[in-house]
Image (cartoon, rainbow, N blue to C red; front, side, top):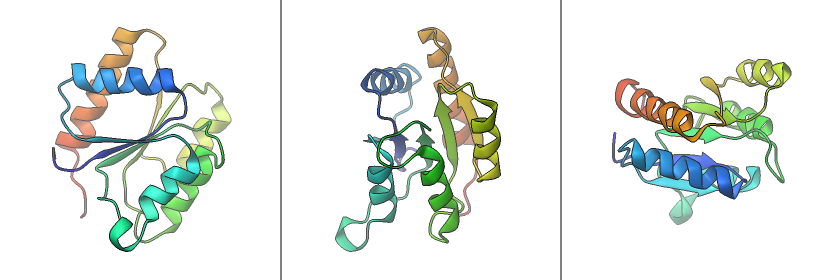
Length: 140
């Protein structure tokens, strides 16, 4: 699935760099499109005409985003026939049980808490990549 991009929705520049570095160290070669707030994520996913972007293989979605929250982005992804089956992995530092429950209630495919340790983070991102990009089969 090397041809499909990964959409990373992350507003923290440090977490963005760590995620990109972890993907490189895990030999994940898919292009990674980075957007930094919920509004940019929706623009990327719902652009029309010539501005339309390639469908990502997976969306890695932070919850605490400026402009539009990650939970609202997830709600809109699931409410559109165009994106309702798109794999969405919540990748967040939130430890709130209500965020976990609400993410699954809104249709998240997975919920991963960002490990604090970089080596653990590389391992987690590598496993995400293997599963969502190599093992998982998409309906489109």
